[in-house]
Length: 463
Image (cartoon, rainbow, N blue to C red; front, top):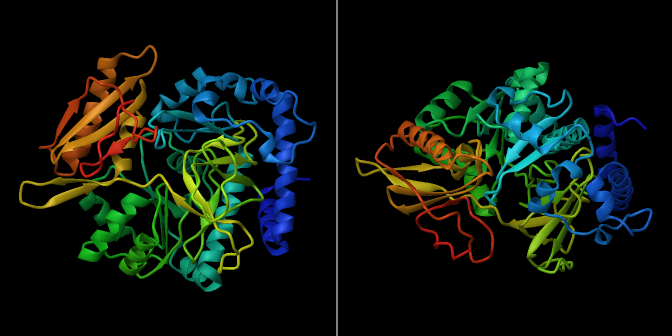
């Protein structure tokens, strides 16, 4: 069976039409196939799954994995024996390679997520093709035939709000599309979240996008610009992603831009995890992913209750398999069918909310900046293992860094300071003080690291 892009698109449509039973049969078959694959070619999983049944269709039979452990076993975890952690790290340390194919085959991405700990991710073409097919299906559903026609008439221009300058999944994927040409590359344009807001507003006004997608916190800041009359775009669709949204947030965007708003809940570990619906629920693409809300002991959380964490399994990416992976978010599984009519499981998410930082200006006003604008600047700096930025006073930032093994702490700090100073100055915030903390990043009372902490938030507890 050939899994071409066309076949994937047809199979996703067919699964939705056939309903829950067909979707879950695909999930069981693909999970069994993935487990067999990793046992054959991943030394890490071969040992981890020793003693399991020959065929595994139930994810609950698998041990739980997490980011820290997998990254520590990186070379034995990946299924291509030519891939090593050092090769990937060297690749991601070079910004000139963003979007190029690692080893001539793979997309490489980095992220710290909400943990502040840098992850190195390798995505194969199968994973990218599944993600493309899933989001294409979602766009068609969100816009409908009339909306798709209107978008085409308007040039189908996509504005993608991304963190630039680093190997982040969204920017690396965008860069690959542009590098490799084709029609898609002509429809996309990236706008940096590091750009000063007046410049971003001016460029979006000139571009007049039909569709806007990108980081939630940046889009919420743009909504304020639209409400104030400085931004005046009329997109047919807005798709926020990367940070949790509430129905109130969705309603505000819909009013500000007078348009359809649909959200996505995903992660670099599984970029096709779920897509939103008109009822403000996320629907898990269960034919290509497994999502398990669980308690602190990794036992299933009943539908209708928020979980302690969530385990995900990516059934598409064969080169760096994430199976029963602890993502760290709290989710609620809807106990009854969603009114939107989708046969896919519906969830709500309580995690990964963006913390916008607001600073006073010299003329009595204020400037707000997305947390992604700060975090991604630090995350793309070589030599940083863990970081945390806390606003300790209205015009003061305290930066806690844990250098990577073998890195020069002073050199890493100077690189971070230069990036943050440039960001603040470009936003008219040259008066903001950036302090270097002596202490390492600190955990919140729940045990997780927050990478960006605004002034109004409670101070984190001791590690």
